[in-house]
Length: 171
Image 1 (cartoon, one colour):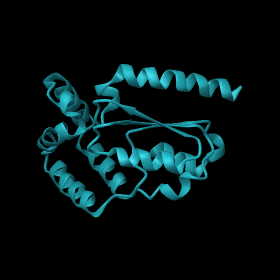
Image 2: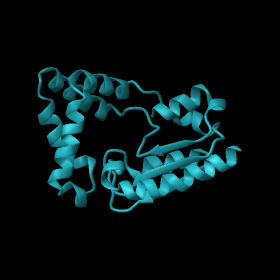
Image 3: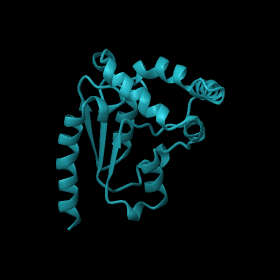
Image 4: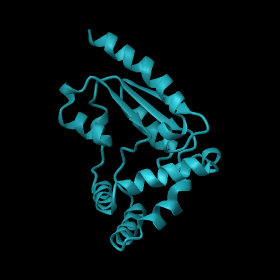
């Protein structure tokens, strides 16, 4: 989301975008309410309860059974601290609709999405790719929202060649 906003503000400074499991849409009223509830729990010191309850949604069902992976994810999120989690959720709640600007971007774009992403459904990635004239859409099989944690080898094998092509086109 930050990359899309940077590209909107300064398209001439962006050589390429790699968008992994993201969403160009503004927050839905339902998600807004869920985030408000989560913020209240974060403020009361109940972040662990929220994160542990929702951790399974971040992963494909295959990886969601990996207790060590889930524990690593929960610890990673909790290490940010409640204040950061609150700021992040508020920023997500107030994000603008990025879709109207995507068609104006001319840089090469890699849109990478887990085929089982339940937090940012694949339709969001399809929509981004359809709006951008130079987008390449790649699905990661048996993967949820946490692409870099679930399938790091696949993500690296996709990003590496794409970045090399991008670097080759820049010269």
